[in-house]
Amino acid sequence: MFDIDDIKKLLHAKRKRFIMNTNASVQSINLIIEHVWKTQEQQRQKLYREYSQQFLTLFLEWDISVQETKEEEEKLANLFREQQKIFQAARIVQRQRLKKFFNLYDQFLKSMEEFQKDHEHLLTDEQSEFRREMAMLQNKIVMDAQQQELANIRKSLQYLFSDDAEDRTGT
Image 1 (cartoon, one colour):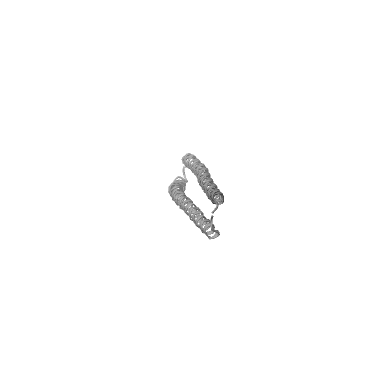
Image 2 (cartoon, rainbow, N blue to C red; image 1 turned 120 degrees about the vertical axis):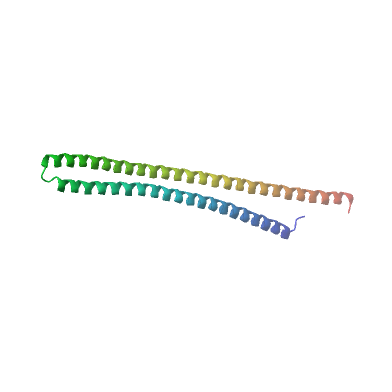
């Protein structure tokens, strides 16, 4: 027959194993999430640096273009027709650069949206993995409990049969 202290010890040991398994799973998941977060932060920083450099170069080119346009206007003040042609050419260049700027900005926004989608997808995958691990842990706990209950029933039956056998032999 089972002693209540033995059952309590057994349940306490099972509880300790459950807590240890749960803590290990949570710690593992936290490490994975931290790694994913760091990787994404590095990717964001890389993306930011790349586009910042491109924006800076474009702004510098634009500033140089504007300065050149002003210098040309001063030099060609007496030649109105030539000044007008140069000004129109510079405006076309500025428009092209402005278009480049907006195109680069659109690319940046699209990249950020794709990055966000990838991030959401990765989080969804991690959440699915976490749920899967929790389901496996839950199944294991249920199986352990069922096995323990079967073992208790077997021991109880053995005890009953051994008492019954002793009663039949007269002891």
